[in-house]
Length: 208
Image (cartoon, rainbow, N blue to C red):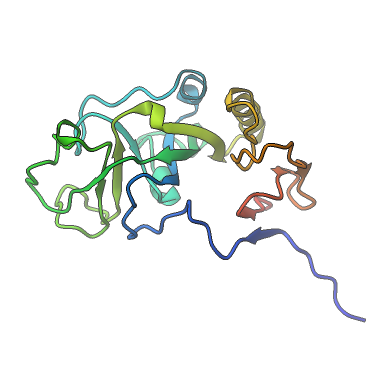
């Protein structure tokens, strides 16, 4: 008798919304990115949008990352139980690559007509000791929160995801983030019991 196969997730072969860490973003595209924040700040971000940082390596803006492991590091001094990683849909607009110390547009890219700045991984920017990439978006309205990618408190995660679904544009799925014009068949995953959508490009169970 053949052994039973326990299927617990999937990954589509191609997703134009995803960027590898070293892949240069193309202007005018929508991409999946992440933002790490304190659990007490997550509700305000979902309901009121992001408040741009006044200072930072790339100047004023909202700092995001396509690297979920990097997003999980923030806030830097918070305990794991206090951290939330929000999954985002980012309209990057016109992108400027900043790849060296003292780049002439490092903090003035917006004033020169760019919507987003990107520091590639392992660049010549000495302030990034980890070697990871950095993304900064000037206008918060270019960012839509579509899901909770990480939250150690499962009850709190469900609450935040429900809030996100309420805030998404009409017709847009609260799980996959797509608007196909028709309701999606949302079900509980048979393995981890999280909400899943057949239009999701990837689902990985969080079972222990």
